[in-house]
Length: 374
Ligand SMILES: CC(C)(COP(=O)(O)OP(=O)(O)OC[C@H]1O[C@@H](n2cnc3c(N)ncnc32)[C@H](O)[C@@H]1OP(=O)(O)O)[C@@H](O)C(=O)NCCC(=O)NCCS
Image (tube, rainbow, N blue to C red):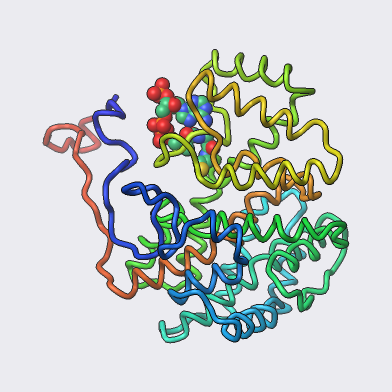
C-alpha cells in the first residue's frame, strides 16, 4: 500500500498548467475570477455579468450585458429530438446521467465542427443545461411538457420557473443567482481538469463537458451538497445533530460538505451562502434546517478543525426554496458550465496534449510464461 501523504497522492499543490481565469487562495489572493474577489461579485453582480466576465475576460457594459442576456434567453429551447429522448428517460434515473446524456445528444444535432464557433457553442451550453434537466424532471416526475421559451431575464429565473413554477419570493431568484455565481469557476478542480485534459486532445466542446459532468457526479466533488442535505435531514434538532456527528466522527465517517482539497481554514463561499441560507430560513419560517446546520458546523470545527465548504449551506438554501434534493448537483453543472467552457477555450488557445507520467510501483521485469505452462 502506498502512503498517500508521502506519495503526494491526488496531485495536491502541484501546478498542472496555467490559467488566467481564477485563483483559489494562492498567495493570499483568496477566490477571485479574473482578478475580482468572489465576495464583491456575489454582492454586486449577477450570474450573467460573471459568466460574461469568465467567457470574454472583462466585465460587460450595460449594452454588452443586455445583448448577452438576450442571446442566452433565445438559446434555451431544445431540439424536438432531444426532448423526445428526455421523455424516454425514467424518473428513477440520476439527473447527472440525464444531463450527461442530454448534452451529448445536443452535440449530435448541433455539432461544434471546427473551433471557430466555440463561443456560440459555449453560450448554447450555458443556456441549454437548465432546460435539459428541468424538461426531464417535469416530464418524468409530473407528466408536464414544460414551455422552455420562458424569455426569463436571467438563468436563475428561468431555472426556478421551469423547475418549481411559481416563484413565491423575489429573494429566491437572488439567492439562486448568487449560488450560480459562487459555483461558476474554481480553477483546476477535478471536473475542470477533466475538461481540460479532454480539450488538450483537440476534442469538441460537448465531449469536454460530458467528461466534466462525469467527474462532477462523484460525492467527493459535486455530489456533496446532496449528501449534506440527506445528512441534515436525519436529525431532529441541534442537540441530536451534535450527538449524531460525534458518533459518525468516532466511526471515522466522512461528513459531506466539510473540508477542502485546497482551502485550509475556510471556504470563502461558505460565509456568503450561509448568510443567504439564514435569510431564507427567516423568510419561510424554518426553525430546523438552519439551526441544525449551524450546530453541525460548530461541532465539526471544534472536533476536527474542519470547516463547511461551499456545499454545506447550499443544502439548506436550496431545500428552503423548494428545490428537490436530486436537482442540487445539476445546479452545480448549470453554474460551472461557464468555468468549464472557458477553460476549454483557454486550453485550446495555448495547447499541448496533457499527458503526465506515473511513478511505476509494479513488478520487476519478468519472463512471459505461455498459458499452457501456467
Ligand atoms: C474535499 C475533500 C475530498 C478533500 O480531501 P483531502 O484533500 O484528501 O482532505 P484533507 O487532506 O484535508 O484531509 C485531512 C484529514 O481530514 C479528514 N477529513 C477531510 N474531510 C473530512 C470530512 N468531510 N469529514 C471527516 N473527515 C474529513 C480526512 O479523512 C483526513 O484524515 P486522515 O489524515 O486521518 O486521513 C474531503 O475533505 C472530503 O471528502 N470532504 C467531504 C466531501 C465534500 O464535501 N466534497 C466537496 C468539496 S468542495
